Length: 559
Image 1 (cartoon, rainbow, N blue to C red):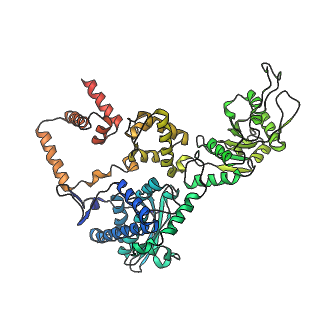
Image 2 (tube, rainbow, N blue to C red):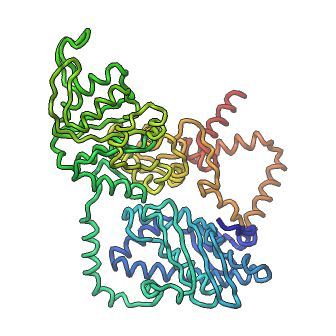
Image 3 (cartoon, helix red, strand yellow):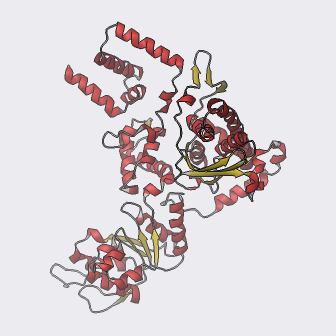
């Protein structure tokens, strides 16, 4: 990571002025607007649907380029007497202040006199990637067109030559964050593929190309998609799914590896559904959930009289799965005796019931899964070396949820539908703040933990309303404002607002209202404004619902 540090942005925040009486917002001498991300999403959708994806990309890229060029003019005015680097990073800082994306410099190397420039930046919380995925799902190519136009426009105006930025990683393609690289246009060998998006073009002339756009979109929709039981488009998910897809048409034994709760059984079921055995049974057994003295009879069956209590002969899981797929979860927990029999099944394709002296041929596809390190188990003597190499023919690693952040919105959407139907709840969805909290959580329990969290939110959220942060987590969660990225607006107070605040404070102190009295008055006012909705009152006060509950209980106790 670069050692570049941003200077304090107080000089930039001070440029923002609100004039609500006249409906004006100013950034220095340039008029600005506040726009809902949902409005940008609708504009983007209409452009793509109306004029095609290429023309929409051109329009948005040129919009961003124009905005970047204007901010470059401001950078020279504001920090013209500071170092060249501090002056340049006005662009990234303004881009963040304007709510578009969080920018982290990875590498920055430029020389104004030599007109040399190379910049490598990491992007997080991209609004364009977020709204694109919301409307169209994940994409094959980067989609932050307006933001990449801004970076190119700002740097080109600052350096006095065309600096072309390319987005080499994008959240919309399944990455955990976006990444951009910029350098002079002539240094890009494929620059001709990108420069047309910065040039003016007639929409009418482009309309003739819409047929090819439609054909391309149709081909994209017709490509093979994962079954409904598997949800995700992140790079890690797609890699695991590709391996499953290739193995499905074969008879190879598959070993699924991953932490607890990542969805290994879902992948096993998907493998079965995509295979020629789909019409046969899918039988799953958790080896860790059975006592060791019962595992062999459960897997291989038992003959009558094999042991005390065996009154009838009974098929085991292998026989029940004949013609289909057997999923052995937590295979690392099998006792050594059962491991030896399992090895024989894999090698000979036949089983022998407990207490029987004859063998039975079976036709079973085996899928095993474990969250333990089988290499270490072999070294420790807890797992047979020969069985390990027999199972490890085709390993598939399923990434943990913390490495699949891009999949969280898709998973949440599917879970909301499922749990909403289960519990008879109609909900508007998950708030932006709650979704950002979900993305920022570490998820040690992976998808299983996410399911539990969403089900809790569905149950606690009021009918027809939004799921908020306090509905999701069992205890009070004080998510950092910097993590959620939603509490920075307070730093944009204008001088007029500061004057109004001073005047208000003078009135309060002159009236002799104490701090406790002021707090209670504010709470009562907020509850009244929210018509008794405590979640709404908490939002008005800028605190969480649990924090408001605490203050209300404190008031009751004092009475």
